[in-house]
Length: 231
Image: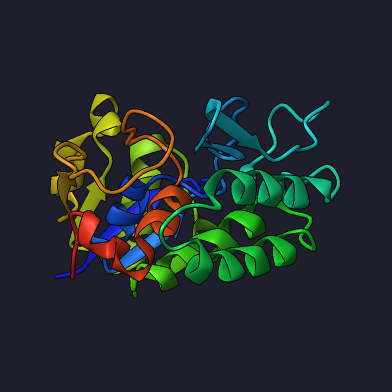
């Protein structure tokens, strides 16, 4: 049995995204899909003393309305230092700041040298997986042959990856044709993001829907215990 998930890359995503990675044998970054503005591709949220704040990577979009995520270029490099300073200021008193902050800072320094959004997202996904002790293979949809059709493309990707099971986020229930997958010998499962435990968190009422950096800085290398996929 081999489980595969196929999802667009996100910028330092929330813990649920990493749970989905941990739940499969191969996680395919679906960055041949169109870049969507005001979405999770180039931004995420953290907690600050003033409340929830967005960290957004500036990207070049003028005249590029149909560009795929993998071709989306970052506008400048200053964003990386700004994001890091915002995180450092907001989490300086987090329990595991001293342990995790140097690793995150190096990731932001490396990210500042990258020109493509996909590369930056991959960089932080790799770093997050390392800190959370997730050994799942990360690959790209561009590494495989692509066909037309929303469901057909996913099925062909699964087949090329040798998948017997396709694991999807719950939001895809509206368009996934489970029967079409079944006729191709692939069983579809939908991940359940409910029921997460709370952990130590700074700055007001607990909030689950924030970047994984919040969990890592507050719980350090023990953060995996607060995921659903704990081993």
